Length: 119
Image 1 (cartoon, rainbow, N blue to C red):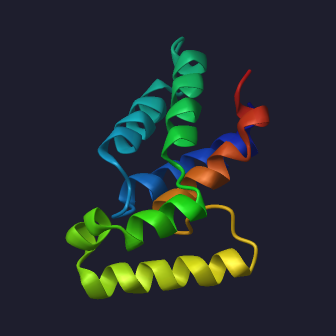
Image 2 (image 1 turned 90 degrees about the horizontal axis):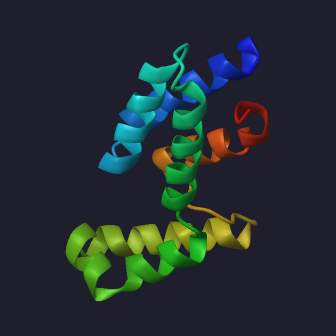
């Protein structure tokens, strides 16, 4: 992978790790990938990392459904769940396909480059 793409993915990986909404699995995959840069494990870890990110990006309809569910309300609290669902519906009406939280945004940015980073 060229240096510019590598730097971009490294930056987005740090954003992902620092995102409060990032899952522990995605954080671990990001850190493992960062640690593998320049090693013989880099190619294999890159594939695992992309697979994890693809699994973690939340489709907008799933976000809406979860935020409006009893479980979502229990996790977020009633007001926050309502705000999340309202925001998700708004961005969906504007064409969003995925959640736009910091973790999903960073993951999506990385996955969009997967053809350039998987060798």
